[in-house]
Figure 1 (cartoon, rainbow, N blue to C red):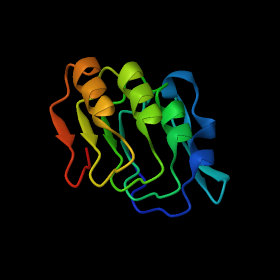
Figure 2 (cartoon, rainbow, N blue to C red; figure 1 turned 120 degrees about the vertical axis):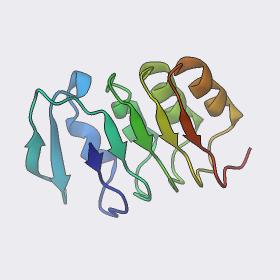
Figure 3 (cartoon, rainbow, N blue to C red; figure 1 turned 60 degrees about the horizontal axis):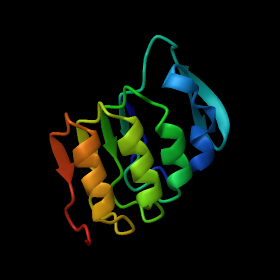
Figure 4 (cartoon, one colour; figure 1 turned 135 degrees about the horizontal axis):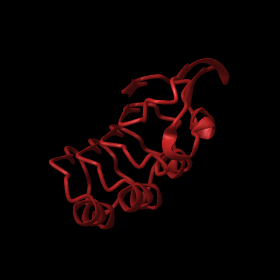
Amino acid sequence: TLILKRCPKITDKTFDVLEPGCDVVPLLYDNKSVAAIPSEIKLAHLDVAQCRNITDLSLKRLSRCKRLDTLKLESLDRITDDGVLLVASSCSRLRVMDMMSVHNVTSKSVSSLVHSCSGLTDLNLVRYLL
């Protein structure tokens, strides 16, 4: 589990370090590595809610995390269908997706999540504009 909620300095650069399969995830602060998740831990839960500098580029990198189970994207104004579609098609284990107050994605993303992630049990679309 990696919780970065409300971290204004988190940007797409944070996720440059994701290894294929998300085996090692160095944590960054001000673009300097300060710690690393051990290689035997696979990223399964990520909360980047209200990290307003996150864009589709981060979602592209996160789509390599095949074990991703929970993704919280609340209030991210800079993500679009492009990023969500990548996650939906690559992260089939996704069970929880929070897109509360995400306004730049369409029903195309919602449909893709529902069809691609058969284990999806919690899809938060509060204040979602279709």
